Image (cartoon, protein in one colour):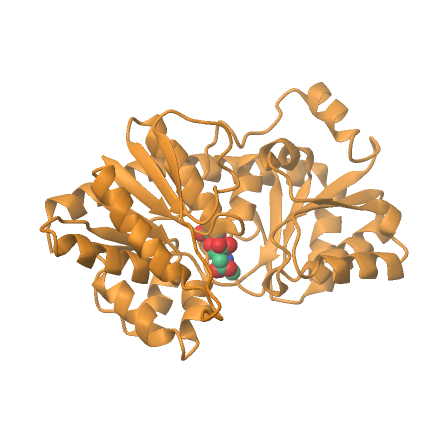
Length: 381
Ligand code: GMT
């Protein structure tokens, strides 16, 4: 198949999923064309079968807001025509599914079919899409998509409840390449790599996000402060975003700044994650929680909040620990108990890796996408 993929290229889990999907599709012999305003950040190097088409958005004094969605629709239609695309797959409904809808109409006027699949990821449904200025068009473009997938049952149910969408929605979960996100099996090699981040006797707690308010990065620092009072530990924060400064100040005010490292955005998080003992994901909401899955695949236990689609990924007490939003004391107590009971931690870390392999590995999830594309192509609406 020849597939056009559009996503937010620089920020967030939906772009990561879209990029990894493109890489995995290309590795299986499909031709993948990314269409976006900049190259997706995890798309490094030049893989066979992967092409990137930039969307130029020109400005003009009349435009207080340059219309990216229109430029995107034009480029989607052009790329589809020139590269003979079979379908478009857009990630995050706003505005991508509206642009795809326009591109489909432009090609229909030329007698050419261009179906599109919309994948719902999270705040396109739970936050931004509910804004009155976006809701009607978001609902319309989802309803008009040739196929709709969501990354969890939770998000599917929210889309039906809050948007009244009546068309079928296929749940295809986030996935991870278990050969790329993998534990370091040789303990000596792991111990040597950990020395870059912590002393040998220190536990490593890690957080990975885009530091938006929904991620509650300040809670990460608060949890760590309590853990660090009880045992030797380091906190490593990966990523960047609006709440980084608040978290840095808090670490400073609590006097733990020497034990907290902000690494900023990192390209190869798969090399950092296996060095951690515990991943902290205290978000207000996660429709799935890709960062926790990536950690689990690396045999790292996630301590997270019982929100959205997270319970579909983490089995509380078995493959991770779940708490109410803001339950900082309890999260810290859970982390301390596990770090003091290394046998239980090891058992749970093993279970986390096993569930990632058994349910969320790209080898299992990719065929679901491919089958879904085939069903769309075989069933003209
Ligand atoms: O909804 C968002 O915040 C945007 C989106 C993104 O692009 O970062 O995140 C969502 O998509 C990820 C990948 O599918 C999920 O793993 C995240 O849980 C989800 N975030 C939220 O629901 C807050």
